[in-house]
Image 1 (tube, protein in one colour):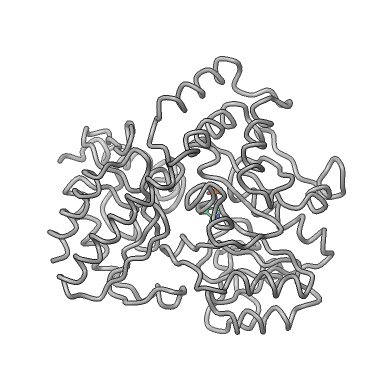
Image 2 (cartoon, rainbow, N blue to C red):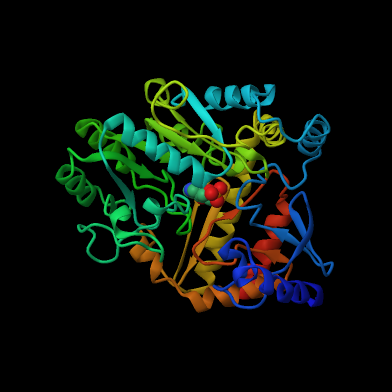
Length: 424
Ligand SMILES: *Cc1c(COP(=O)(O)O)cnc(C)c1O
């Protein structure tokens, strides 16, 4: 397997882009080596510029749930593009996608389209603050909600103090309104919510965490958040940017049976193109301009080509798609558990539907502290061994792997055979 062209491109990219990339995880700093530049992707595979084809478990970070370049999605995009790439005016496709979303997720009575998950979360929080006339938000360590200033905090040891920014360039004045609790810690979260009851606008959470690897909520955790927020008059915001349309057609809220006040979506609803949305109870959403006093806008929001890709992707997910994804997910989970048992090394597989993480070096992963003690060296070796065998995994131990409708039993069995060779 040669990587000459990728290497050349990465050198050129290094002169243009900080770190040679336009989003940090793509630089492979967690695994070492230079990233592959991708020339094309189809179904469950991606092909790099040097001509090597891999079975892909990144799936555009979950967006490609129907498989890359699905013919009907490509056709929808082509016909939308031929009718104009964007108008800066309303178009039918945004109504169609909006209806598909509100039908699938009944807690979203009204919504607004944006162009990324970051925008969705940033805007949802602005509305939540306006609705409650309160400043503070509470998030959980290890949950990622995009890179807007107030959300780039996860707190270090002193979880009861105000958060320290995670990034340079974020004033403490901004994150001083962000509280950070531990995922799955009902008691600690309860204490924090009660201590800030009068100031708390919203609790925001990935209802199934997937940005510290897949960490499902323990039974009762989300319901406790529902009850606690209602009791103090704060909003509950589900960040379903990854799990929306991934773990069920109605997202994590359908699968786990907890109804939030607001929901954010992106990734799958753009079908691979830039699109996101935030929505929720009508009385909250009606605060947005032009009806209400909360300003929010976007030149490319509701872009007709992105809306067409999203609408067509959601259409492919009706019917028995989630049974199929569950089948594939379960097959990989059972296989990985067998391998771990035989290998006799500490590791744990966590999966919800078609997203999963194999944590190497730890037996439990229920919050960020536990996840952070995983074995980074073991993951680095695993990543490169899998790559050599033709399997393209997320280049970080703190990410979810994704299956799509284009993956086959043979792909899963191939992955398991390669993993067995590598880990035992
Ligand atoms: C990807 C992601 C975001 C950010 O979305 P972008 O489109 O990258 O801005 C926010 N929340 C979660 C849970 C995500 O996985």
